[in-house]
Amino acid sequence: MTTLDPTPVSFGTEDRLAATVTDGALRPIVDRVLEGQRLSADDGMVLFSTPDIWTVGALADLVRRRLNGDVAWYNVNRHLNYSNICALSCKFCSFHRKKDDDGAYEYSLDDIRKEATKATESGATEMHIVGGLHPWLPFQYYLDMLSAIVDVAPRLHVKAFTAVEIVHLARIAKKGRDGDDGIRWVLQQLKEAGLGSLPGGGAEVFDDRVHAETHRTKISGDRWLDVHRIAHEEGLNTNATMLYGHVETCADRIRHMQLLRQEQDRTLRTWATEHGLALESSVDHEGRPHDAVVLHGPDCTGLALQPTPETCATGYYQTLIPLPFIPDDSALEHLPGPMGLENLRTLCVARLMLDNFPHMKAFWIMQTLEMAQLMLQNGADDIDGTVVWYDITKVDGAGTHQEVTVRDLQRAAREAGFNPVERDTLYRSVQRDGREWRVES
Ligand code: V47
Image (cartoon, rainbow, N blue to C red; front, side):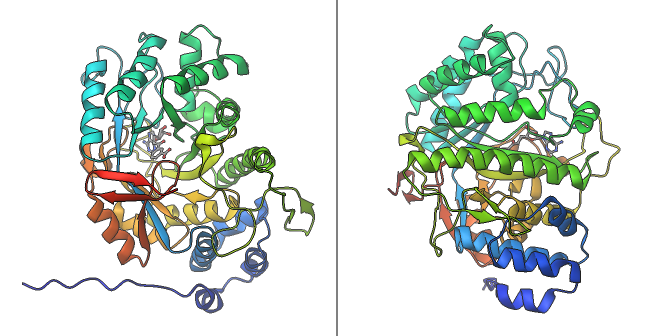
């Protein structure tokens, strides 16, 4: 039997732009993007409301190619959700359980050791660990978890604990949940025990009304940003998410992106100074200079982030992961959740607004691998990894086993017209021979 290889498709960005601008409101934005200028919140709102979504996609693709060329990043990873027992009951979440609920679980240190061993034996480079706010596990459990992983799988990068968990740990370690000191202490202890970076979860949407309506008892957006700021100060790279498509507005999404952009400006200024790099001034949409760090990709001159944070005193945001709200089994199940074009547009707008984020991730578990392909063509440069087990969200009745192979990831990227490149957590390319791997320096 013969099989037909799908032909990789490619769209010439300039051609797409020339051919598709059908909305006059987009013309000044097209000019600004072509000139590398920063977009305003008003521009963001135009991008969300224009019927001409294909121009929005072409612009996002242009920016994505400036930063990452034709590379589509993926990684060989494992997710581990150590417990679903949670003191909170956020309305969008179907993962949390109370202690005596059906299906409540927690991993012992031995379970974690076994998972880390399996991960490393399968050639994974990363373990992504998050869980609920467990009411009675002591702080020592989290340190022991990291030490156990380092013990059995010393090369595995541990990306673990959302900002929400970090604040919880500061509280249970009796270091207080307010102020910077307790958070800093927790992060220092975890880093010493083996923590490599922070994932982007728990950011939801930085807005007080949304916070009150959907996740009232969780930390505020300001507190989430504080934790990531302190993590960066402690030399840890972090990611950011935005959980959209429930009760927030497009203006709320833009505000979320602006707050992240502002914080990344601050972080990158320190980062660049530390590296002895001159800062370039950029201009905003009205031609006013602002002193943001300008990121350029491989085919441009200027400052590109070098992924060498192990030797760096300052970390930064690596990627934004837009997370479409998945209503199934949550207290907001009556809401429909966003559909494909909304997901695509949100990713595009994020790519265009967050000019100082080097990466945009289309998390295939929540977007589907098929949509992730389209997203690669419209601003995303990363599709996450092999995952294997995932318990936080399940689309269309999926179970906890949610795995794709490296071949699947590579095929998806190639069919979308990109060059699949394996990365480690810090976006260094990985050279692999079966289960053996090394990072390219
Ligand atoms: O923290 C919870 C969100 C996050 C739902 O850093 C939901 O590389 C949609 O943060 N519908 C976990 N989202 C996922 C996450 C993540 C995933 C992949 C990569 C990275 C990274 C981070 O999912 C939670 C919460 O914000 N979430 N429930 C839901 N029903």
